Length: 424
Image (cartoon, rainbow, N blue to C red; front, side, top):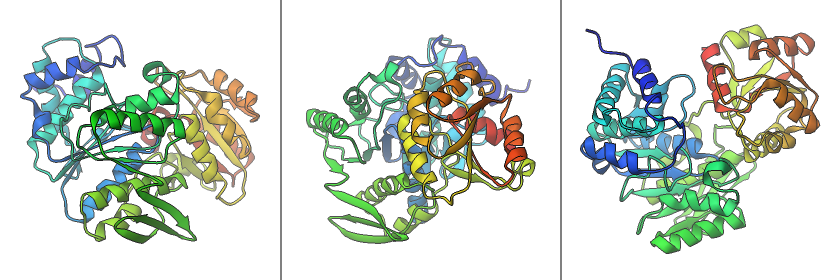
């Protein structure tokens, strides 16, 4: 009999717990112990938490380490087009056969007990990492930090906290201090943590958490500095100054993400060849990604088509800052969001740059905000808005009226994943 493929096993795993998000580590510890505690057998771990920039920072660190010849495991979430994107083994996306084997083993060891989809798939990733030789493991937190399923490594080599902002308040708390405290739950005694730019409230919470557990901090603006000078990025810490190309990931916010990555590479005593590679070789889809080929591009060949998966007010600010640097042509938004997000906070920064907004519901996503609600929120933010049946219909409508415009598809990683699958 042919064993079930990964999609079927993943569907079975979705049914193991009624809640998509239920923060606790008890179920994770139980399953990891049944699997032989693979979290204790990983190559040196770099654990990354934060609200914005986790994936980009991870991608830059990986680019730098790989330029030095290292084999690097990487774990990220959510995926965009295929689940396999979450697990990168020694530089390569996990194969279907290997993924199926890991999922099957975890499903059997769990023996029908309650466990969330993210928890059991994280256990599968950790098991794959433990069984595949590599030099480093990059673990991106899924949500929060303290009770996230990735927070099971007793002694990581390094921790990183990227900028913290308001998001997932229903799970992490209703103030920036509470959210930052949850993110700082990844800190471990004696393990250095690199801290990206923070608000005063967020930084105070992180420093308090570090003091409680005895974790040394390397703080942006104190221990390391990064900024743009002309067409160059300048990074400086106690080891000296680096004069580097700008990050190839677009957006001014990527300079601070690059700074955290450079601080990590410096801390890990990597050679100078890694620094420029971190800036220039990283790729991270759906972060102000320019789409240059595929069916959607063919549908509107003169349109300048962009894709971004940011979904909170800080992401709206970052997108707006990037739009301000682009040539002044009409920019139209195609937007779909989840019903748990602060849509007004996300859209208000973009109002001055948006000629219009076509609202869509995210396909095959139960938690999508209805397109009509997105359009209403856009209008309240001062953006001329209409409802579209799909991204394709919205793009055709925009191209028909303004064929040489800029179009940004935005609002959710789930929408971005749907677009990448459609455009694949």
